[in-house]
Image (cartoon, rainbow, N blue to C red; front, side):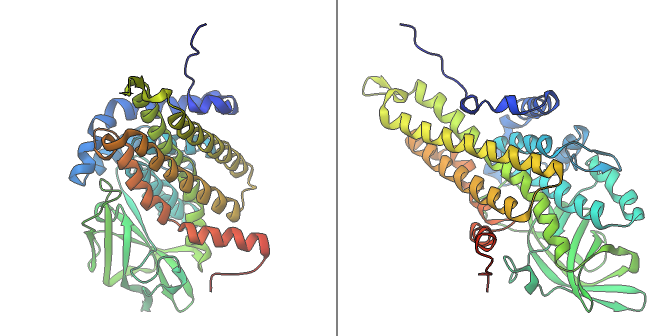
Length: 392
């Protein structure tokens, strides 16, 4: 009797059949780039706590990955599923790489694309799409994370100018950004502003001592009497709905991307279990090992089906915020569980940088928290189910 050949985890759900030829090609192109150019360096970048962000941004820009789901102004104008699959492959390499792309394209660029003037779009979007200029998104503050309405950063009128004062925290790309999209409280409500990094009074500092997303650039932004012209404000953003819509846009990349980290953990673990021998047998031949691998593959497959479905809803204009919350809550939570389970199969080898599992597991702890904690998304889903607000 012939031994059956192992199948890829995604084959259990026939995921490829749900994709177009273009989407499969985009996924393969990003995967090849990650394999050939990035994977050899990932462990070192994580260990050192830094990757070459500007060089990576230019490389991603040359591939059309920055703002790839936006139309016009140098952006590729591709669909939500194609964007999600690119995020999946980037995060299969490292969550920090996907974070760079998400913040650039779905937060900073999207804010300008959705709420900016035509002049702002012409000035910033083409070089940002090319990776020649980097953006960041300044919403979170030291005392205002899950409750952005509690922000203390203020923008006041002074003649024809705006003057901004405040602090933003946990800002991806902050210390390398050429422009910061900063959200501030005004007399008329919360508004967004484009703050060039060279503006007097604007400074950015790296956040040190991180145990997660170590290779990614995470920063504190300080605005001390930052004077901006009137046309620095995003004209079509007024109120908290603006930044919240940007976050919803970016979460689709997380819904796909987190599964990339899980997939890399599972692929690594299956290969390890097939080679590792214990008690005179391959580790993969034990029932408890196969149970762990099967459970991980099931949750991964269900997450992929959910991600693709939400991507199609996005493409049809039918995606709701609570559906995004459900996707982010489920897929990141399950990805972290898969990473933790895979680590147990690798045993002591799983805690080293020789294998990517512990690195993914540490990174996913940040992904679980940023752009809406699991608790916040749970309450969003709960509100949708009951009609009752439980945030306060």
